[in-house]
Image 1 (cartoon, rainbow, N blue to C red):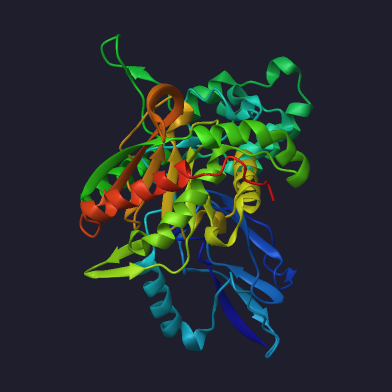
Image 2 (cartoon, rainbow, N blue to C red):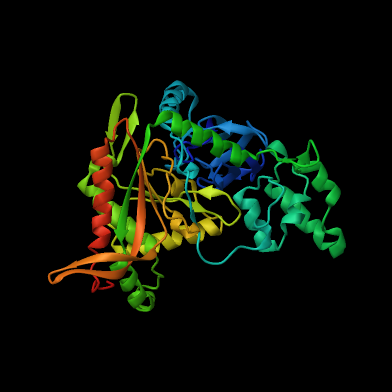
Length: 447
């Protein structure tokens, strides 16, 4: 028998620490490899961490509510010699190899990047709104995705959430807190379900200095976004180029095929997968736009991983990633876009869904915006925003001469890092995306 140390595994790029929400196993209990042993929260998702080995949990090394750096030991497990099984997502440190693993973890942390959830422009998730538990949050209190998901399923209103006294770090409401509240609520009358006195004690409320202006303290998510937005502007030399694109063929094609597309593929077709397809084609033409910067080195990415900036209905921002987007046809892209959007709305994204982006897009047209100047997602070097599609009078060139007609037009905004992307590359890239969109075949088959 030997004792091994279980460490906090990697949760995705730029995630440097996790908050321990709940231990699912007690010291002395047997555990099987891949069994969930504790629940943690990152800045993006709540998730369960599996045991790396079968054996007996000997000791917790951290407590519920502790903020634990990635790679730090969290528990000790007694295992039989030769019986260890190490899942890919749960690295384990044996005492004799502690120094080597620490060096590896340090290298991983050095490569961790500011993540895609802090872009300057966002794309709202379409479709239905969630339950009241995740809307109308006026007290600016942070709730983890897991807590919001439980609240939605159990019909806990935002007012009730605000009334729960949190026992987690920074007084946050943990899974145990909300489950305890739900159990107690079932034994009380409806009038006793909301606890205004607890809300006053635990949730930051707007306060006034002069009786006119309210002062609202930033929650953790807003502080993080603010910090990373400023950091991105300090790191990258932002330049933005604009192109106006004729989207008429795409609008007409989508209007004509959307019902058949749904019947044949089982998926709804929005503009997003069509936009992503054009971006992927342009990246293949200009691979130096699909890079990152590390010191004086330019790292050219072989995979094309497209991040979609998404605004959740509760106001939080998240950027799921379509990995190897160049491997999908239009139907495949539609399936990925819809799947990520649905899981984002239901708070079911994993850390892997948010990691590894190499280029990001945002649909600011959803807000009625015609153009914008998006902020680059570090360590990427460019980001593209698509404005609203509007009908406009336009000159149409024909073999018989120029005509005046009504066309569906859209502005594309392309922000890029002028340290490594010159105006020629940045401008040619966005123009190539526009060209692919304008060349969309009106008679293109669905499959």
